[in-house]
Image (tube, rainbow, N blue to C red):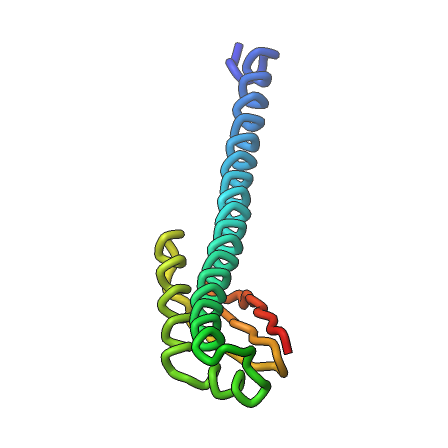
Length: 137
């Protein structure tokens, strides 16, 4: 009697097929899981980089306010964010945090004045993260 014609042989073939399907499913789930975790890590790295860049800008703004003895006006905030040293400090802080999270340096770091507020935009892994700094007008 042929091994595949009896009940045990057919059960063996069916078991092998089911194991193959299960293995493919596990490999697929592993890949999806890896992509999801990498996305979460990229998001957290971007948020940390934006926070670091925002902190660097806030420190410089605080130093400027302390030196003047008063809050900055709208025009002064616009001049402040246009200073290359401010953008450089933001970029340096964002890059440092990105590297600590095993990510490439940000592709873009911008410091923008919107009235009395300052926004620091950090683009990391294709996503833009924003730190908002308020001011007392």
